[in-house]
Length: 77
Image 1 (cartoon, one colour):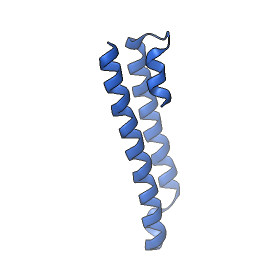
Image 2 (image 1 turned 90 degrees about the vertical axis):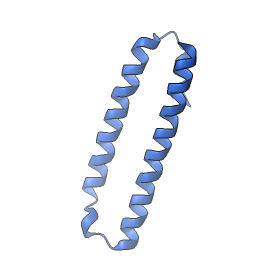
Image 3 (image 1 turned 60 degrees about the vertical axis):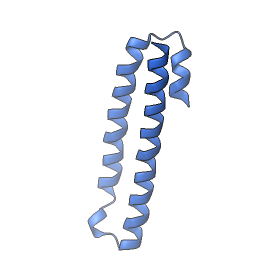
């Protein structure tokens, strides 16, 4: 994962964690914008379920990678 590679870069760790937090917040905001544009309440159920499953997969992947990054960062600190 690219975030874990940043642990081994010359970029200071104390600045990396706030950067990742800012990226995480922006990622969340962008996902909310994309989902809001989908007009979820007007979708048929099958489309709604596909959209929500995809969104949940994206957020689960992000959470998993953030946890991995945090663990690597703690080990490196």
